[in-house]
Length: 407
Image: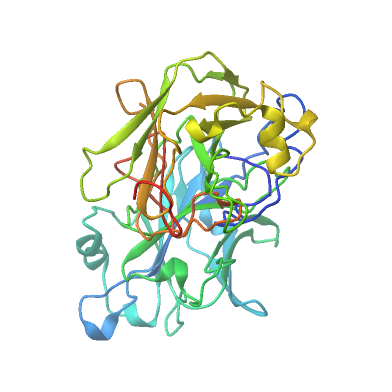
């Protein structure tokens, strides 16, 4: 699956930071090879399911696993270790023999105390699926409580011998949040994962790309070729500096081949009440992102007129030698600024004329604050949630404050 540098998204955190890793802002474009893909990865978790009545909430929790190998995997050789607090865990052994075919997925129903008496037919009715006893793995916990909704959680897939295969976290590292259930906030919603955290060699921690999403048990979308991995819509550095000359979008090439940005465009939806109100920013110049590499797209509104790469670097306290034309795509925008800071906004990456044919990483949902002070919106996660079904190559939505421009 996917990799990126551990600036990090923390796993994907919506981190807001002034720090930019030297790997990204190095002289010359740096390409990365993906870490070895674990045999099994967690692709979706439903930790907060609804039930069939008020007394059986959480009856249909599940973990979705994907077999990334060229051969079948028997789940009887594995177990799940669930850390329900940072200091306490429980182990659930997958003792029943059931195989996941090469490249296939398997939903593990966490049949907790609330689900006792529920049947396979009930599970199918709840999600509109048609699993059979050989395609749904039922992990019966008896009186066990299953997956929690509140507090930091960690699920580890292990072999029976105790070797960690992959790790999936939720409710972890929530920026500026006063809640403890950010990823399991809404009942009967899914947390979506992909592999791994960007550019961490040997990482087995899943990259969380969405939370509070519509569950899609048994279905994993195709990964997009290009990702929007970071946005900076408000680069002003003080309350008196209202200059938005240095806004940017960071793109990541998730493929093994270089991608020429000529032929791609951004579509900026600036009025959430009217989807017909948008601006198109077409990338007509030819410039390639290497395999597993990044590109900073500097959105140069009229406020950026006359600004140079050296100015851009100085704004972020970087040596000018860190930024070269191969690292930065300068995209001229006809408005004073590109991305507004107040109200819900969406930036969508498309191929010219049509959405990208790759299935998506579209982010919608709960707004994100774009504060003053060169803060960025990173790794599109949690508050910027990804919809698994109707998406573009890359799409990020946020809501901000302190705007000086078109709302």
